[in-house]
Amino acid sequence: MGNTTRMIIIGGGVGGYPAAIRAARMGADVTLIEKDRLGGTCLNRGCIPTKALLRSADVIHTMKISDTFGIRCKGYEIDFEAVMTRKDAVVSRLTQGVKSLLAARKIKVVTGTASFIDAKTIQISETGEKIEGDAVLIATGSRPGKIPVNGVDGPGVMDSNRLLEMKALPKSVVVIGGGVIGIEFAQFLNAMGTTVTVIEMMPHLAPGLDGEIARILEKLVAASGVNVIVNASVKNIAGKKTGHTVTYSSGNSTEAVDAEKVLLAVGRTPDFSLLNVDAVGIRHEKGAIAVNAFMETNIRGIYAAGDVVGGMMLAHLASAEGECAVRNALGSEEAMSYKAVPSCIYTSPEVACVGMTEERARESHEIRIGRFPFRGNGKALILDETEGLVKIVSDRKDGEVLGVHILGPHATDMIGEAVLGMNMEMTAEELARSIHPHPTLSEAVMESAMTVTSGAVHLP
Image (tube, rainbow, N blue to C red; front, side, top):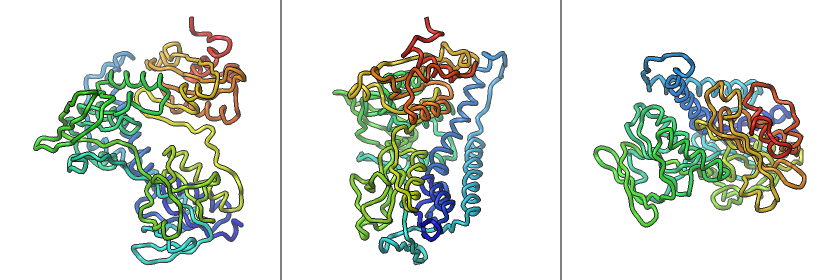
């Protein structure tokens, strides 16, 4: 089927372009439609630019503690324009790479806004061009979310897109939302010398994380200099000549905090508003396109993947869903697996997790918990990054690992081991007996598993 199928993919982000490459490799005739820039949110306004900025923050931190390593650094100067220029250069290199990969596979790229005429015909709004296909994948991603608060549309209130386009550092910022986006930007701005306040309506930062990990992370973020306010609901944003006043309620009291700028970081919303999906009859629920286990919508031959289907809005998950969708469109029949989807937060220290939290696991399992602190790890001591721990949640009866949660140095690099293991239904015993190289941070994963089974070597 792949040799004759005309595949239309709407959206050139991480949900769309890997799917286009996969479809082309399978022999399909692929057309990719993107209304903005190849790479989508992740490469242009999300994962990549934010991590480039956080790397600059890491360099500042290293310079501040250089005396620890016997290197005396007599101060530093932040060139914010250069920081942003480097960020843009990293983005440009990657997006150009995507363009080259698509060209190498002879994928037709159309720039414009796609809209359904019928289930097999797409029209480009700007030109009127009509493109016909045998199968369609919707991968149009998401947009920054909003909250119904007076003043949210004020000129000094930024979403993540606008913050990434800043030309000058603000002296102070209130970040509304203490999720992944909010705390990553908060730590970057704090490192740059901006006074930062984070307001989160939930009981702790990073809602959705394992509770123990979230509480430790919150303490570390606060210790880094960020003013953290939780259990607080924003009521009003008032613009002034010198900045903004954000009013919020906390318990029975009403408080206010002033700042030059406000960052709205309250999550993201699926974005398919321009597709004319209702004309085709594509079902959508709670603001997201509905799909079955094979990533197909209720209309045969039309699939959707990534942020547009809601759920966990993660770049790597969008890519996996997109590739699953095109394989099914081209003749396979495989359900999308969500068994082991990792989540990462690029704070300092980093957070990475996969599988069930302790709270979730207790709802359906008898469990055992293993913990190993990085202060007992040789490589962490060498790096002078000993904050945090590895936490393993396992089933008490059969020993299967149900969740792995890492707070510490290079956590986002280490979580891959847990993802692979959980996909293979590993037990804590199998993980504990797997020989890990020394000295490495990954030994903390092994020793955490040991605490579940026979006891860790490097804990009293």
